[in-house]
Length: 114
Image: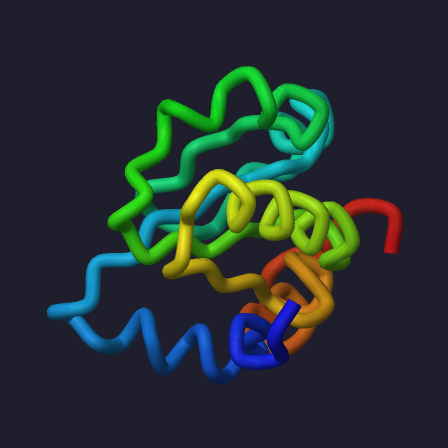
């Protein structure tokens, strides 16, 4: 996976500040984890990684898609899968939601289990 698809939390925050740049978020955490700690991002679609091969057609390959998970490991696998399906505008957050909550939302409760 090219390093260009890996965003730091600060880089993602800058992208979110661009009001004319519509980003779509894909949360690939298990359903129970996603329900316990909802995505902080607007327009998030939750499809657990284990279900992605069956539900990826719900996504629009033309969207700029930011794949999120706890620490980034599942996001790498999801991006590799989506690239094989023809998706090209894919991003992930280095360190996942754990890094996002530490660096961009320090006043919020820490990611569960931390």
